[in-house]
Length: 155
Image (cartoon, rainbow, N blue to C red):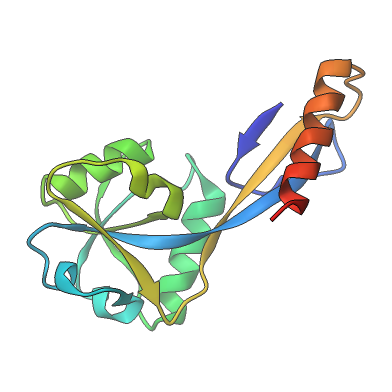
């Protein structure tokens, strides 16, 4: 079993998957950023900002979602720094390298110098997908999948 933030490129192969949820993207901003004082940020307001992002080969699903959201807001993000993990990206935002769009659950990472704000004018979200081997007959895997399915139906 694995939780991933991307849909399977070819779901008919060895793995089967189901989406757990769609997690809204939010802005991670350096503390001194002008938009840090706002309750929420229009994505277009970040059009001229330097962005911190991970390389597309590391996470195509969220990467593509971020690029698409920016383009729909009328700009292509100017990526000035790449990092392989969201925790590294948040650290770079804290150091003032730029802004980032991240899944909302990552706002639990408290780091001095970073402010998280919801985005306005976009419904961009990162999927959380549970995958498993199609032919896995493990009772533990089946029980986990049943529990996950039940949990997503329960408000």
